Length: 150
Image 1 (cartoon, rainbow, N blue to C red):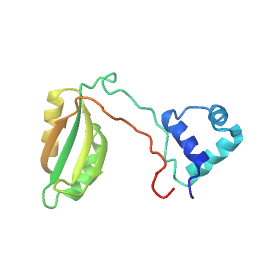
Image 2: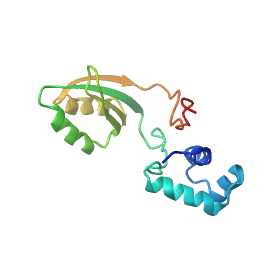
Image 3: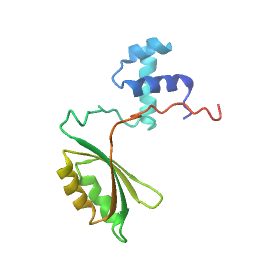
Image 4: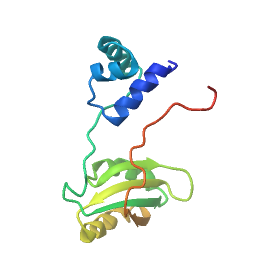
């Protein structure tokens, strides 16, 4: 499905606030609420819209640290790690990547002691590099219509 301009407008609104009503979106872009609902349903069915979620403040939820951990898996340890990482409550996101490291994870932790214990669990699978997040510069930026090939 080609995403037309109206669908992009709907997607922009939903990415800013997934709870915005179809009536409100429709008023802003010139469609009726049922027309917005129909377009949203079609984009959900096609997998363009994958899910809706609430963004939670890790600090307000009781975590002091957010970190980016890069893992370079030991020989024969990548597959076991890919199974194990799904069980770690600390992991917000995990990406399998190209380059020197195999994995990048975004994790939230209670404190430095928690970080140390978590790294102790990871080093069984490979060499780790940890980067503490100081602040978000860009977070959850909406996916926008590509300017290439207009």
